Image 1 (cartoon, rainbow, N blue to C red):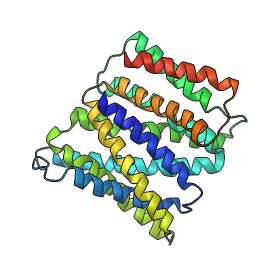
Image 2 (image 1 turned 90 degrees about the vertical axis):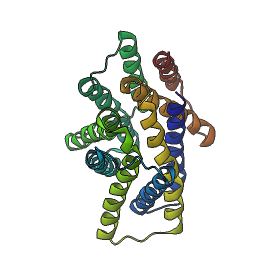
Image 3 (image 1 turned 45 degrees about the horizontal axis):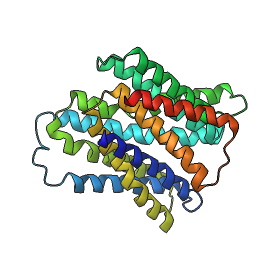
Image 4 (image 1 turned 180 degrees about the horizontal axis):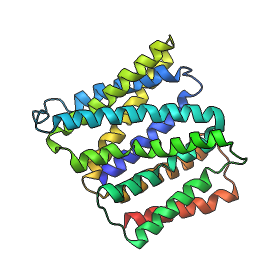
Length: 277
């Protein structure tokens, strides 16, 4: 459980630092490239001297890592495009609801089982997230397709960690995350070069600061998946991050709390208790 708690804290720090960077770092693509470069370098440092990295199954590890890295980047691109069309609120909501995809695929692919109580807790988690991120207004048909893509690929981007834990050779674990972030970095650099974008000192600074907890969130979540079923780890990981960020927004950014937000907060807290027992 310690690994899962560490992953949650790291995930919260990523979102918090991204919000701080909003008014200072203007070039998201360059910030993202620096973020992935930091993740790759940090991965090499944390996994240094690991003689077990080059073993049978290395090809599978590298292919799956490249797939994971591309999913990370593609999900971010979808999120950015969806925000332009649908706004931050509903785009963030569909990204978080990608938890549905992760849990369902975990049940199908990894032969995991889930009790009625845990299934109810997951449903409450999803409902609470939706209520906390609800927005007004109708969505256009074109925008809805983009939102559904965001939901699917946002959820799918979390799955390679479980795929590696289930099918990969644990001896090659030292290669997986660094390779994933290297793939994301190379593609993000290619995209920035295509648009001839420059980089400010704040883009580099926040990219570096965000990259550290970004890597650690995947680092600790992968280890948590060796101890907990994905159908339990992912809902606790996502739900806890949503709850902490919601409370952090009230304390750090002076966001007002309405009466309508109290019920989903209580529901989310209760669902996390049910999942943790």
